[in-house]
Image 1 (cartoon, rainbow, N blue to C red):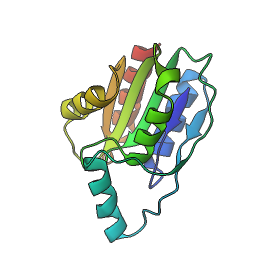
Image 2: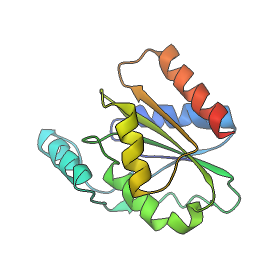
Image 3: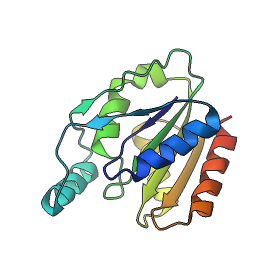
Image 4: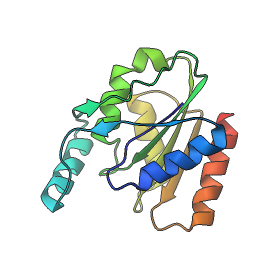
Length: 152
């Protein structure tokens, strides 16, 4: 299963590329909190850095038969974005025992602190990759290929 959050559409494109490689479907967690505009952008970062969750529309993906789950999200203020946090908390029991991979998209946050923060709050990852929004298509494809190879 591939589950993602997007604010601008960048993470959607990444999730769809992952899903295509894995022969899966990408499922969007829809953030029900308005995030357009500079003030809301900074407010969203504050929520993320404080470990807050937010209201979402759950894609209600059936995880029962999934051996692995790939999560795709934008990094907000160096943290897990609130919509993904909400989804992870709601589905913690269903995710237990599955191989989890995380693909994050950011402007420049360092990779290892992002992974460490995620694992400290949720669970160990079987695979992790970070892409920068400014990366070339080839660089993004290489990161996606490596992530998919590691999760198989």
